[in-house]
Length: 224
Image (cartoon, rainbow, N blue to C red; front, side):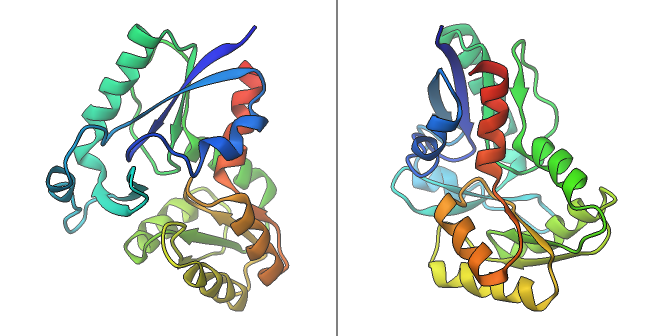
């Protein structure tokens, strides 16, 4: 029996850069997509730009461009989408299409947070290793370092390379992490894809962890 699962991006749906790549890993599920920024104008989205000390998120819009927003502005919109997916679409579970940190949302169905899944997995496999963290934007490096240093892994290094920008910047960030002695790398954004993972692994010669596939396999375990 096919299960219906909601997928919520913090940007705009559909996430044609994410969902088609992971659908095959999820098993027998029907994905219903929506986004926290769906229905908003460019001006409304621009007004959500992060200020100093804000928690910074980077996401993709429907036209393929990327945008930086403050988490504060989208929490209520994400909760509204969760409520709608459960009440109107009848989903049996929800996956957030973002590896950022979020407060607990209210949901009567299982709600999967990629960052939580990622933290538990990486904490298990990276003990005793120097962890390299790749974030989409330089403004996220400090917050990423704080997050990954707080889970007891030990040595953490970070660099910025966006999955939504020139790929050369990703390869440069990979070289930076390699030069800093990273022994394992986590790509801390749902926008990174399988091709990017394989190329970073080739450049660095170390294991690379991809959030979208970690999350997709969790969906398969529950619903597939």
